Image (cartoon, rainbow, N blue to C red):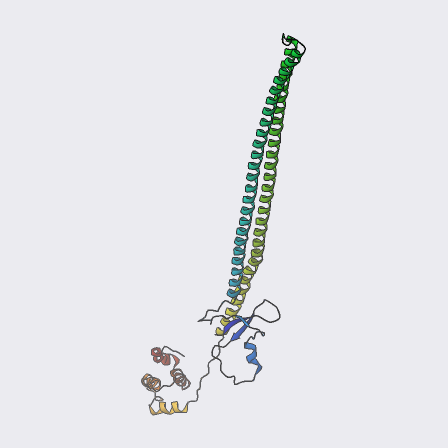
Length: 330
């Protein structure tokens, strides 16, 4: 049975051509063109895959080469998909970690700046309070000196003292009011900055998630598209190869079913002489069996010997009785 090798042509086509080889080639003795009708020759090119020799009555399935190739391509699509998904995951995790780090650092800096401003507001207000007190004491001293210079030793009038006290109290209240206003503005600024930072973080995290999902969807679509393009080809191989194998088997069955009419040599003078010498032509038919046994032992064709007896007029039933031991009949 011939081997089948898949060949790839140099024309750029990916369709394999079958080359049939005789595993035990012998020189051809005929120049008839009929021999070429029994062989299929492939085009030029390098051998892509060598088929194993067919054994017994089983044909080698040539489509297994392409099936293996397509299965490997589908596996490669899975491997590429896994690699892409890993790359996407790594890029996503790196970006997410960077966003988290930047956000946390911003939160820390905002809190630090808020604390610094709070302390600055407190120091400023405290300094102003001390300055207001100093101013009040200076005003009391200056007032006493002025009154002494005018010869007024009785001290400041009640209304003057009350006026100085009111001025001092108003100064303190203004300082406290400004302190509180500054602290309130600072708190609002801090909260706004924190809110804006968190909003920016959430927006970028959402964009990152969308990018990740989009890339993953593209990776899945690429894999599915590639594998979907291979599936019909695999199914087509199974169908077309099945039809081809059925055709080959039918051809062999047709060849096996061929029947011919057997021939027989009815003019065997040597056999006739042997029969005459053995006295077989005499009416004593009891010697037919002995004569047939002698012919078989000498290597003669028992069927031809029986045919000769039939031509000599011996009854067919009688002949078949002697032929039972040889498993034949005429």
